[in-house]
Image (cartoon, rainbow, N blue to C red; front, side, top):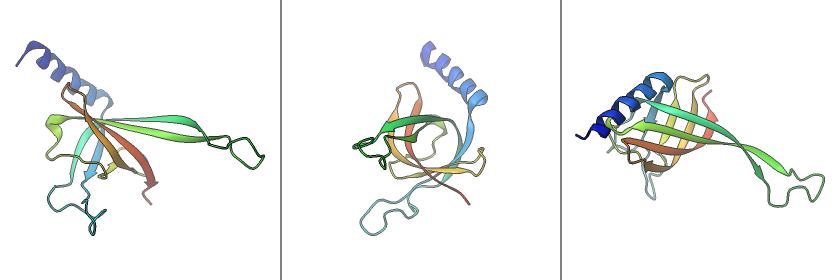
Length: 132
């Protein structure tokens, strides 16, 4: 192990301790007839990750041309960063993520999974409906 790898592991662990939230990952099957159901080949798990909700203002295609058209919509970008050593199974697009530390436990769907090259995986997610 290189010195930088050891320092990165310590820094990543400290980031999780300071800013981490408990999240629950539920793998979803992909296929013609079973899409959206639980994946029997991958286990659901809880782990700690850093959750980043960023509000984003988006322009609509024809917004503002008529009084009835909304010119801007407010959306959210959701990124979750998880240490690779905390992943018992692979995370794939379509998997369901639930933030257990937040009020009403928001749910999101993973759209892309990108390793950052420093021992963490970045999940870009599409926010879903709140748990009721």
